[in-house]
Image (cartoon, rainbow, N blue to C red; front, side, top):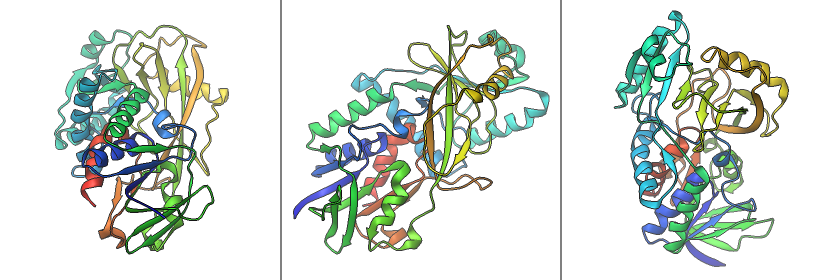
Length: 363
C-alpha cells in the first residue's frame, strides 16, 4: 500500500484551496476527484459573488470565515491575475413594510464588522435609475469573480508545491486506522494510506462520511438539497451593481448578478429536492419575472431565458434554522487526522481560503 501524508477528497474550490494550503505547508498531497475534471459541482453552479459577510449570525463560522476569506480572496486574485471586480451591491426593500427587515440586515452586518451605507429610495435610484425600492443598503465590498479562473490558479499553486490531482477517482472505501486512513477508489481495495484525510466532497460529503469504516454514525449529518435555478437576461443590463431583494427561507432571494462581461443573470430560487438535478424548466420563468419586476419594473417582456441550476449542500432542512459550516475534527468524532467539511454552501467560495486554513489548522 502506498503511503502519503495527505489526501483531499473533492476538487471543487474548497478542496483545491485545502490542497494548496497543505502543499504550501510542505505536506505531500493527493487530491481525489470523482469527475473527469475539477470544479464541476457547486463550484461551477453558483452566482460567482464575492460576499462581504452580511447575513450570517455573529461569531458563526460563516460570518468569521467569510469576512476573513473575502480580503484574502481579493488579495489572491490581485496576486495571481484572477479576473474579478469589486462592483458592490444594493440590498433593497421593495416597500415600507420591508424596512424593519432591511434594518435588521444592517445590524447583523455591523455585528460582523461589515458596515453598509443606508440609502433612501431616491438615493438608490441616483445610483441605479431603473431600480424600484423604498430604501436600500449599499455594500461596496461585494464583488464578482471568475470561479473557473480561481480554481485554475489554486490548482496551479498547489501543483507547483508538489500536490497531485487524480480525476475519475471516486472514493468507494475508507478504512480509518490508527496509522491513518486506507482509501480505495473506483471499487478497488484500499491502495493508498494517508496520515491526513480531509473530506471536501461538497454535496457528497455526508455520503462519503457514511463510507468511513470506524467513524461514529452520530458524526454524520443528514444531507438536504436545495436546488436553485438561474435565468439569464437577453440583452444588455442597465445595472452596474448587483441587486438583492430581502432573503427568503433557504436562500438570498432571486437576485440580479453580473458576470465579468456585464451579462445579467437572475437567481437562485429555492426548490427542496430529494437528490441533485440540474434541469431548468421554462415553467419557472413566470415566478422569476414577478420576482425581478418587484425591483426592476422595466424588465422587458420575454427577456428571461433558462440558464443553469445549482444545488446547495445543506445540512438543515426546510423550516429549520440555517446550519453553520461544520468543520469536524478529532474533537467532533474522535479520529485523529480526519477533517470532514459539511454544509459548505454560500459563502463557501468567498470563504474558501480561510476555510482551507481553518481545516488544515485543525489537524
